[in-house]
Length: 288
Image (cartoon, rainbow, N blue to C red; front, side):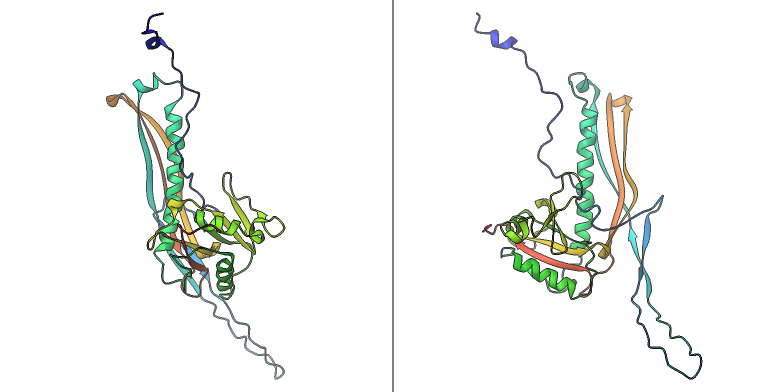
């Protein structure tokens, strides 16, 4: 056989495409107070204040009721538009078994999901230093003891302990929690089903969720900042769920896959007495 025979060997691709490792995003969905608007650039969340009951006077005939005068406020949330688009040359489609248009849409959905998470967490980051004393440090490991300290701080603020407290953890902090049986053993914690592909546990009244490294900012060195928060402490508004359009652009002999969403976020109950606790961990600390 001629030594050039390998030049005629047949090559094939497996069906479908394997996406490079990337976070799918949308971890925050369902953990915040969400609202939907139609054709609006901004919207308002309504906040009802606390009231105080008064003792009724006894005897002496009818008494004038004492009004609670509970506060009524509103918080404005602006919405921005985000896009994930891709050009797909038609001549390339003729050379592929798979439909690149579908793969582009899947890639865009993950990109927009990560952007939704990013908008929420950057809004939380903007309040850094206003949420009271942070739990943990950027140069130390996370631990069950620190987790309890964050819980204690939240409970002292009279935050409702109603199953709607969340904490999305950096991978290092998540694994440092897992080495403790009180967290990993099903006798003390429950596997939490939030969404497909989301890893979560419910322990001590908090929904703990495994986050992805790119979600968390670095305050210093190898530290990562994250938050424990009540669902009603931060709001997210969406005026358009993900929209997808694939159009043929004749002058470019290509398809344009365009995907976009409109959303925004706002802290609703922050400050040193609100429902948000800032936490810190050294992402390079040893898991032991």
